[in-house]
Length: 490
Image (cartoon, rainbow, N blue to C red; front, side):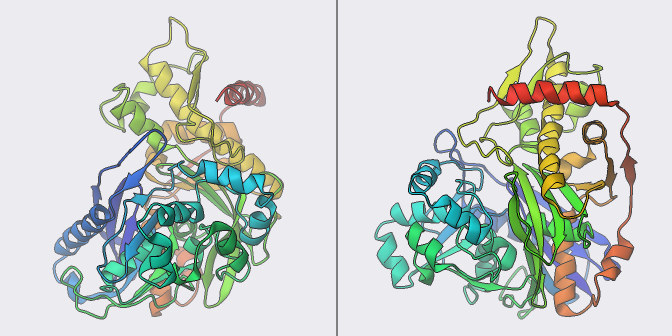
């Protein structure tokens, strides 16, 4: 028996085949184009996303002979908040997807704040009023689609985050649903009931008729129809947003256990158990998952730019030729030579929540070169996570003493050591950095019954390397003081 997991990310799609021992038998990835219509706007072509999923899935299945007849379930994990609006009858998107990084609705968020509505949204959804989330993106799409509101009212249009879009495509339009974790990122779902909230919908101007049904993460989301040569009727059973999937894949099942994913952005989630936590430090309160009707909650801090800063060095500044090159370049110097980089290329996320912030490089001298800038970029990625963990340590009801890490940039040893040094905690890295796709596969296995207890997942979690702090408090203080000064200039 195999599980097919689809990990649809911000810059590419990955398909994985996972066996009953939780081993990755095959993994295929494909990037797709990023679209920037104007500064601070980010879009994706939904059909390009779908095509990348089809191609990676086919490549994955082709690489394991006979695998198409062994798939027991499909799991999906996805970039969250990215918003798609499509015609229910044609199945075609009416506009490019608006990506979670896009800041086009910042003005709408400010208008809602000026009406005094932010406390209401925060209380109901656990989120802040920010262009990051899907609700204002959907409002924008309805306002900029011809006859959009009328078509939504009568049920001609369907909204979804990327999970819903993929479910729609895999089931040939037979299922319009989402899971608790993706719904929780929309500014439209009530935190404790995980149902659509009438007050939020009214203030965003969104009709309930456009929204998908919300299911448990291990629920039955529909069955495959003519998908990648698979037999029809394979159930979709595991759906989570990518960061919640990574928390599950890292086996962070107990309150106080936390993980950080270093992908396009940086995402820290801390398990807080069955009670809804409160944050006084700008963190988000979110469901970690809902399984068999029981919800586990988490505190989350997100930075909009992490690995994307390395891509920026590669693609825009041409300082490196490949993402992997940054580590060897940065290691050429002992430190950044006083250079500080604030990766606010798409604003600042938690705990600052400054949509107007922009990237800053300070401390440049005649002696500053490529290596110092590369080192400063890695330091900046790590220092953002310091801000998040500081906030989590204040808000989490259980002390956080260790951090598990994953995502592509977690392979960078220098970055992980710097992270441990700055946090003054151990950083644990598993051999498998694809925790998002693995998490979706494991929840799908739980949904289809091949996993009975979470202990089965915990027992198979493995440690590849532990990074322990090597620096003293004086060094940490100087680094963080310089960072705090630079953030004020962003």
